[in-house]
Image (cartoon, helix red, strand yellow):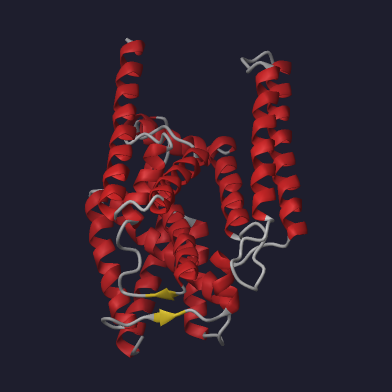
Length: 346
């Protein structure tokens, strides 16, 4: 980093820790403090500690962004755009103009390129499919016992059967040898359990905790949430922290996939795909509606479109046109759905 950049980095982290304590975001303050300690104490090359430090830095960025938007009152679009440009400058400072930082550690490379064993892949299938079935059946039984509105049991069983069947087919295909050369490549990629863990944890937080209900309330109507006694500033800032931490995990996966970090990392279509995945999945641009699983589905749609058009040999111009049209249609559906809901409520 150099002495000047290092001292500036430490100073920013100290200030951000103080801001996190002021906003009472204690988990964010803990991760930021851990990152500061790792930075000050130092450690020999260790991929696990390096990835932990990356997530901690992401939390620091989220805390800074959340404070400027939620507490200071700056427009979120301006803040995120300005800091997006600023972090590109930080990367240039650390790597150098035109430079590239190669990733050679086998653990870092395996994050996006490694695969589970065949046995581990089928165990993951059993755990994921069994957990999904157990959650849906338990919810169905509880709602019927309490006399609440519930889907027909047959429909729930069909849904479970369809998901389990698709998961089984996907697991079987991924456990086949898909390498063109002498080295055998088979098994579910490590990225899959990473996404599943984030999906399950995030869905539980949003659906089953008071914090999740407050997030939806603030997204739906900020003023109404404030009048109901919700700490809107803290909720909004915390969401920025979570988003930045997940972005750091995404950056680790992306860097592992390409095998390097360059000044252009994070640019290109990254922002388009991040927004597009959420909107195509059904997350409302007006706030208050959306699920984590929908964003995963939206990301799968974008990946399928891009990979499919690439396999068909379509030029980049066609890929951009199709992605833009798909995103525009998704946004249009969201607007029409909102308008219809408003008319129905009158």
